[in-house]
Image (cartoon, rainbow, N blue to C red; front, top):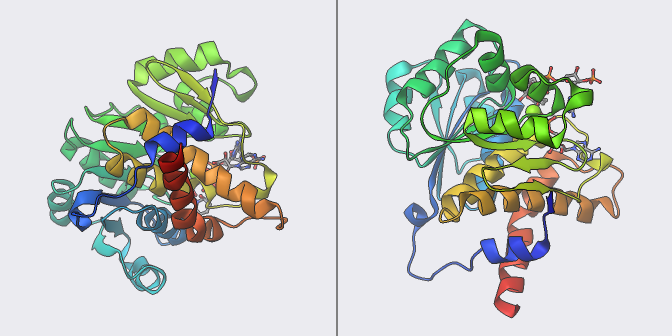
Length: 280
Ligand SMILES: NC(=O)C1=CN([C@@H]2O[C@H](COP(=O)(O)OP(=O)(O)OC[C@H]3O[C@@H](n4cnc5c(N)ncnc54)[C@H](OP(=O)(O)O)[C@@H]3O)[C@@H](O)[C@H]2O)[C@@H](O)CC1
Ligand SMILES: Nc1ncnc2c1ncn2[C@@H]1O[C@H](COP(=O)(O)OP(=O)(O)O)[C@@H](O)[C@H]1O
Ligand SMILES: [Mg+2]
C-alpha cells in the first residue's frame, strides 16, 4: 500500500486562476437527510461549499430546508421526494453525493433508484451511508458512472460480504474491481482502493469519532473531484488526507474535533496546500 503524502496533496490542490467564476469550480448535488438525519446532509453540503465547489444544491426532506438555509445560505435546496425536480437537477451537475442520512425506507429506495437510473457515465457519483446499505440489502445493480464508495467497516461488510476481521487488502481489492469504482474504506488508517493502486492514510485518530465525520468527508470528496477533475484518484486521496489533516491539527489542543469544526477549517487547509505547491 502506498502511504498518502503531503506532496501528493500539494500537487493536487491548484492555485486558482484569476479569470474564473463559480461555474469554473463545479456543480455538486447532495442527496440525503430524511426527517431524522437532516444533520448528515447539512454536513455533507457544507463540506462541499467550504471545499470550494462553485454551486451546491441539496436534495433533502423538506423538513430540513430551514435548518439547512440557517447553517448554509450558500446552498440551494430541492425536495428529494419530487421526482421531476430531482431528475432535472441531476442533469445539471458534475458530481452527486447520495446517502448521508438518506435512511432505508421505501422513499429512500425510490430516491436512490431514480439517481441510479438518471446519472450519466461522465458524472461522478459518491455513494455513502444508507445508500451503501440499500445497495447491499436490495442487491441493486450499479449505474454506469464514475463511482466512489465511502463505507465504514460495517458498511463494507454489508456491501462486500467480507466480515470486519477479514477485510484484507487482497480480498478488498477483488471486490473493488467488481464494483468498478474507487473504494474509500474508512477506519483508523483509512484505505483507498483504486484500479491502479491502494493508498493508506496515516493521519487521523480517535478525536474524529463523532457522528457526521464521514458525512463531512463525502462533501469534501465531491468538491475536490469537481475542482481537480483531471485526476480523479488524486482528488479523492487528497480530500481524504485534508479531512484528517485538519482533525490532527485541531487535535493538538482539542480532545474531540467536531465535524462542523473540520468544515470551518477547510479553506485554510486548502490554502496551505496550494501555497506549499507554489513553493515546491
Ligand atoms: N447527524 C446526523 O444526521 C447523522 C446521521 N448519520 C446517518 O445515519 C445513517 C446510518 O449510519 P451509521 O454509520 O450511524 O449506522 P450503521 O451503518 O448501522 O453503522 C454503525 C454500526 O457499524 C458498526 N461499525 C463497525 N465498524 C465501524 C466503523 N469503523 N465505523 C463506524 N461504525 C462501525 C457499529 O458498531 P458499534 O458502534 O456497535 O460498535 C454499529 O453497529 C447514515 O445514513 C448516516 O449518514 C450518521 O452519519 C450519524 C450522524
Ligand atoms: N479512531 C479513528 N481514527 C481515525 N479516523 C477515525 C477514527 N474514528 C473515526 N474516524 C474517521 O471518521 C470518519 C467516520 O465516518 P462514518 O463512520 O461514516 O461517520 P458518520 O456516518 O457518522 O458521518 C471516517 O473518515 C473515519 O476514518
Ligand atoms: Mg457514515
